[in-house]
Image (cartoon, rainbow, N blue to C red; front, side, top):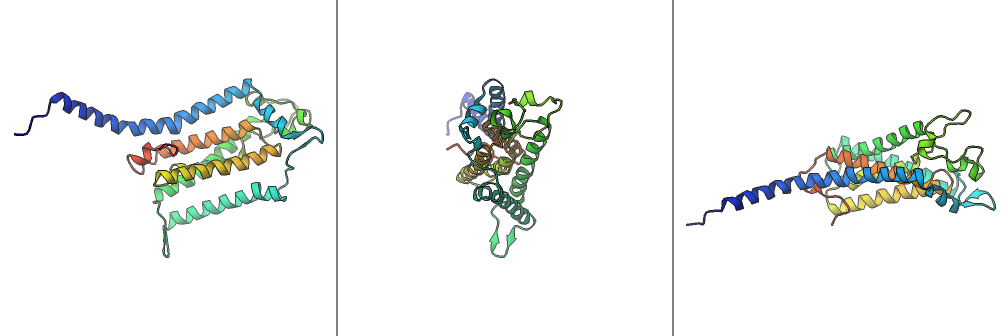
Length: 262
């Protein structure tokens, strides 16, 4: 006769199964919401007390010629490479995803993603730059090239919280967060949508590379501080992570796995 299973052992097995089912959600909540939100608050608080933005921008400004290391010009080779062409490619990518959402098969070409994943990436591409644009319109942060420290005018350097109140006689700028980099970081949806973990890693690398290159170009041209680019990246991570939790394409691997986990 088969041995009777001990009731305590059966209870332990049941408890382990419940814990296993809960773990993916807990891991998703931490890696997609808690971690980026915590880092975002840390950067905001640190930026109010530590002038690391000025330390970085001082290294990117030629004090002798009083010019930035890169002249902002959309028609220059650098401007075309890091400003104009990325916008065109992002628009082309979004348009392609929209067409694939309408019809997932074009001749012999079949999209490996279902419509749910395609809609998710499209939402990331739309919502992340939109959120950044709303914040830019209401924070009033001046660009580095517009403050008196770098010969831009009479406006002093102010942190985000110091810039939000209106200052009489001063123009309200839209320097925070980094709007141009938000287009590249909007590709953060690619860090959660692919079917395989290796695909999610590649998506993460693409988003980080695109956003960072676009953000670095703006820093070199005096259009943004380092914290502006970092905040945009963390906002993109947070928005993409929140959306991914509400798009449960598969119950285990996709919900549990952050792209940087082995």
